[in-house]
Length: 137
Image (cartoon, rainbow, N blue to C red; front, side, top):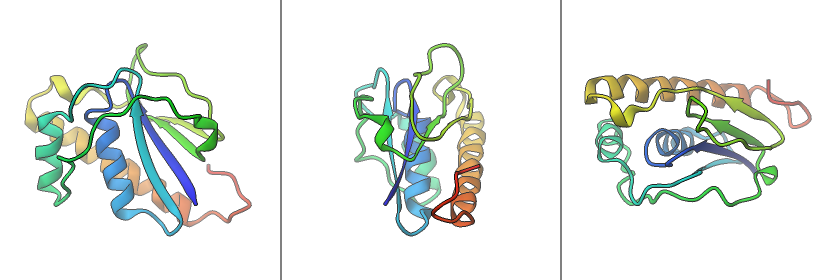
């Protein structure tokens, strides 16, 4: 089974949304996890609201500390932007540099959610088109 890890600072918004989208649309044999460097106590209410608009309930999710050995994941994706983002080492790393929606009005946060969905679906498309012996591009 392949594993994608979405990483950000608080694991309360961007990485949770990315994990939820990936797991909803994941190609066979793949799953997603998410974690943060300094996780908050709960998922941001706007993240829950925005994902409910998409028919995905993340209200039972809990932010998690980045403690796992990320070298055990196939792809690590850093979804945050700026100097506070965690540095991770994995087989394949991508940096998406998505702005922080926690400080945005809901209408702007919705655009961030939509951007995350597009990026996750593009990632899934790439994974579906590579052979088991190829690297993710």
